[in-house]
Image 1 (cartoon, helix red, strand yellow):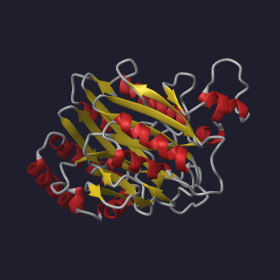
Image 2: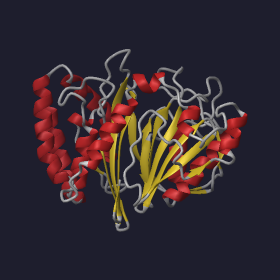
Image 3: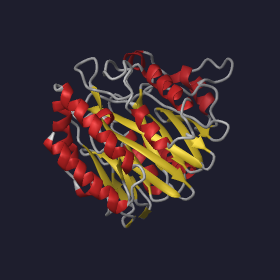
Image 4: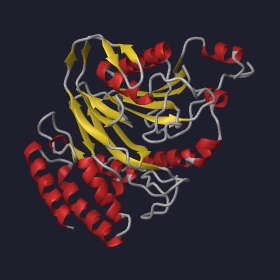
Length: 376
């Protein structure tokens, strides 16, 4: 969301419930121009930017992150007619990390991601335990000046500009860019026509050419996207934005109860709802610098958004096992409603102070919070 000289970025990462997702600081790096991504050996520049990454711990790539230049990127699974069912290429998470490590701006990151997409393709098993789970990807790419909504189908892509004329973008597990793209892969309409994905009549529509219906319908993708857009439209710009974005990421369709795949805050409930929100991030990007908060663990509805002040002075960096510890607490709150309510009340009190806390105060607040949580 773009607001004058500020850009706000929020994302939930919905993955398998038991898949650890680590919050990591990666220093700027100079070295070999060859890199092993999750499945492929690829060429990379010999200099890469520092970044905060939220990384599923079995893969090289990241679900989301923000780099030292204030570029934030996150991805979502999309289910297209071109998903590769056999080969292994770059995962969407690999593309996120490549964009963060090489992009000094949102425009740079878009160029990096689309270049790697077209050179190496996308694909491969993307699930933690479910190795049959494969998908294509959409991305949000942002910096202080705006950014891009990028949607892909195989090696085809379209991108829509985030700017003052289009200041609010939300993505979910479905293609949503039709004819209104700003940029696209080379000769896209002509190649789509020659490949049989478009009949050549009227304006070329990316979504109509490549979208499927069943998985987006089962995932309630449109409902979640519409829910987020409505909430963003109703933001009170006179009030602090970060706490309001946190409430958006905590939304359940039925109020306080988690109920369906239409929930923004996802809770795993068996075969029909296999995903869970295992990490959440909010970024404030501006010309004066960026601020980032992550939960570090599952379920933003019961989690505390924790500031990332720097590579050393941040609480999550000092607690590398927090994701696993938090999963035990999350599991307890799923069967103990009183514990959940106590935890949420305690979080509200601490979080109000954390949004604006400096480094030392934030560390002390989180230490006290964690001691109290351990005693609940």
